[in-house]
Length: 136
Image (cartoon, rainbow, N blue to C red; front, side, top):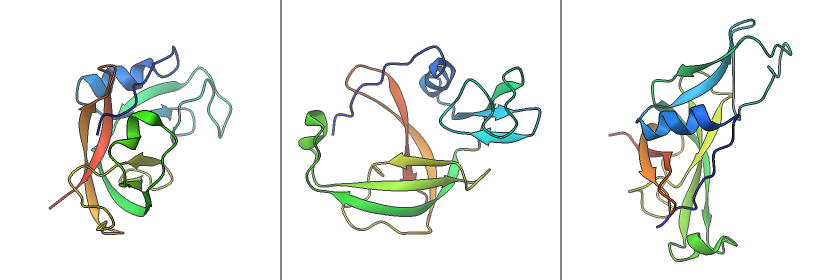
């Protein structure tokens, strides 16, 4: 399934550049030691804008929940329907959640609570995005 292209902006460019290099990074506030995703210009907890950095993650997580998409309004995703859409909790902070199609996992065979690892896949416009696959 061809994934919809991503257009990085000034705020998200470090995230997408890291993905292109096979790394998963999440914005971190060094003032209060809080991870946040999606990235913001200021820390959502302490309000600091001067203490934000990008921190590399392990690339491991857990499947929190999922659904199966049968009727997607995004034209580029319609060819691959139905498909899984899973909510992934990062190992470093379960409050940080990301979405994934779970490449390689058959529709409706998602192991809730199961371990996953990040993989990087190109989109329709060539930008690489993090996806998650079930870890053996």
